[in-house]
Length: 156
Image 1 (cartoon, rainbow, N blue to C red):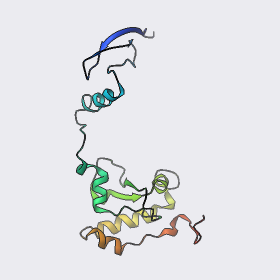
Image 2: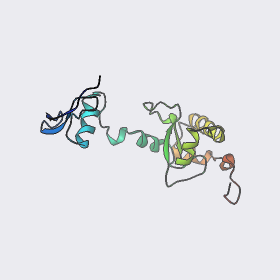
Image 3: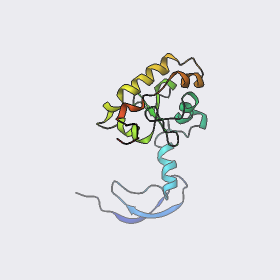
Image 4: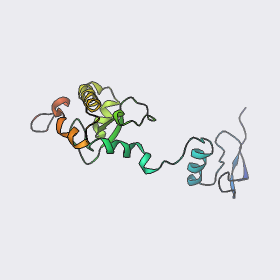
């Protein structure tokens, strides 16, 4: 038997103001706005969630240790920090691989095999050179751009 939803007035769990909603059912509103929903569900329901300081963000950590350039194609404008072991709470520098959105999508698709060797080579190289400054790591790592089937004209 379904719950009957009836109009009613409830108190916002975040700002404590009264607002109208349909009471009953699984999707009953408990906060008065999307802004308050983000604040409520990220902090009250999940106490371990806190807005992180900029220096603790994974992207900040990544770009302090890696060059902001895709290791496959050399793209520098839009580059993402990929978690190599797929664990998003593991923000060790050696767990990051800089990939452009296209090659990041390759990794998370059936086309992973096209970039697998190059990513593994990068991770191995980074772990071996981890004690070097970033600029020296760049000089001794040269990506193999032809891994994804690019031709000298740039057309696949």
